[in-house]
Amino acid sequence: MIRRIAALVVTLFLLLAGFAPSAAQADPVWQFPLAANLVEDREGLLIAINKDKRLEAGYVPFNLVPLQLRAVGRGHQLRREAAEALTAMFAEAEAAGFKLYVKSAYRSYQTQSSMYANRLEKYRKDDGVVAVPGSSDHQTGLGVDVLNYAWTQKDGMTPAFGETEEAKWMEANCARFGFIIRYLPEKQEITGIIYEPWHLRYVGEEVAAYIMENRLSLEEFDDQVAQAIASYEAAGGDYAALCRELNALPVPKKLAETDEEGDGEVSLFYQKNP
Ligand SMILES: [Zn+2]
Image: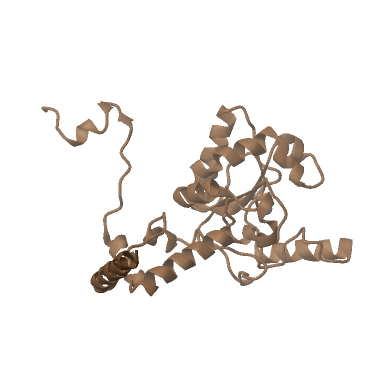
C-alpha cells in the first residue's frame, strides 16, 4: 500500500515537473464567453453608470437621434444604435399584439438635476426614486422607459408594471434587439435601484443575450469582464494586443437566410451562368 502511494507521488511529481514549464510557455487563452474585443467596448455601449460611478455634467452622447415612435410627450432622443433597435422592437411588439409607448429616453444632466431638485422639494429627502444627477442611465442615451397605454395614464411607475403582458413580452424579447432589463428585482442591492420592468438599456445583441440568459446586472457584467481581463493578463497575456489583433480581422458578415434567388448560402459557392 505504502509502495503504491509512493509510486503515485513520484508519478504526480514527474507529471507536474514535465507539464509546468510547457504550460507557462503556452499562449494564454481568453476565457470569457464573449469575444475580447467585443467587451473592450470601443463604441461605449457597455458603460455602467450608478451612484458610485457618475457621468460628468458636460457628458452628452455623440450620436443622439430623435425617436419616431409612439410616445408620451415629444422630443425623445436616443443614441442611433439604440433608436434603431427600439424601432425594430416596437414593430415586432405591435405584430405580436402589444402597443408600446416611450415614456422617457435621453435625459441631460441638467434635466436630471431639476428632476432631482423637484423630488427633494416635494418629499424633503432623497427617497431613491429619482437618480442623483450624473448617476442616471438615461444620461448615457442608451436607457429608455417603455410602458403600455394603461400605465401612460398613471401618475407614476411601480414594479407592478412587471405583471402586465407588455412587460412580460419585453423581458422575454428585449435581448434579441440588444436591450436588457437594467434593474432586475433580485439585483436591487447591487444597482441601488428598485425593480424597473419599464427601463430598457441598450448594450448590443451579443451582450444582451449573455446578460439576460444569466440574469446579471450591468455592474456584475462589468466585474466579470474586469476579472476575465485580469486573469488573462495574470497568465501572461496582453489584453490590448489581443483586442488589436481581433479588431484587425475583417468584420464577420451575417449570411442572409434567403435572397430573391432562393438560397443565399449556395450562391456563395457557385455563380450562375450569365
Ligand atoms: Zn428609466
